[in-house]
Amino acid sequence: MYLWAINTLTLLAFGWDKLRARRRKRRVPERRLLWLAALGGSPGAIVGRWIFRHKTRKRGFSRWLFAILIGQAAACYAAFTFLPPLLG
Image (cartoon, rainbow, N blue to C red):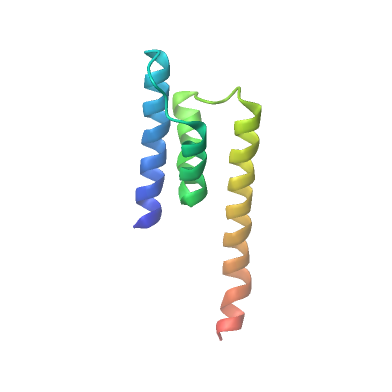
């Protein structure tokens, strides 16, 4: 439930930021977008970048986003690989 909600929220945040950018209004801070990704919304962030073609030229932002994604993927792999044998 949580992952569904955070990914939906992250996807909507990317869409909202893109809309605000087009209208030249106050934007969603990059730090907030990265925090949403770090809290479990990295798949939603990647999909949001693709759907809205947003934040694709920002190298620093992209590096952080993909570092978060790789870290989360590694944590999931470790959890599903090493925890079951330890738990019995």
